[in-house]
Image 1 (cartoon, rainbow, N blue to C red):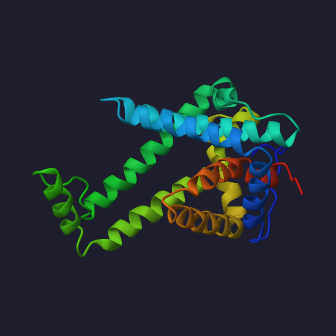
Image 2: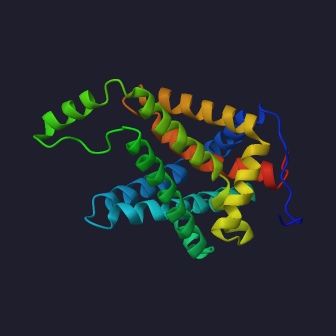
Length: 239
């Protein structure tokens, strides 16, 4: 490990602080953040519907966009304006490492799904009409709910372990493997804070979906900004 980088060990309650600080930044510039996140979602959805390589590219680019969110939040915290161009800031900061991170995350998720498939989780729906296919697939999951829960939990663990990796790559010029190593170390050192953070974020998204999903205009930007506020406190020792 690089001795020049320090990882703060925080109390569990600081997970809530990351959300609170992210909301403060959002409240100061709500419309730029809503525009930034809306453009991100639109680009991602467009890539997902592209045949053959669209879904892979969309997954590869997610760390790039989250690095962009961290850079935009850093600029705002320093007193600068959040601009639409900030959505592409990650493309100018160690792009190869960020894309490599996206590849590694996708490989890990696919490996989890493959492993659960070997244990009996249906990974493809039975053939048939669209409506019948959905019903048949849900029926095939009967008695295997624990596999669905285990798959979801394993993916959450992977995503949580690399949560700090995009800003580490963007701000410290790390390789993907180095950033993953530091992110895992930071996640273990701050497991309580990360659990509290994840639980609150889950609750925020649950509530955001209730009024026809209108709350997502706040929930998604707060999530995006919190990728920086958490990193800043763990690695930069900000109060």
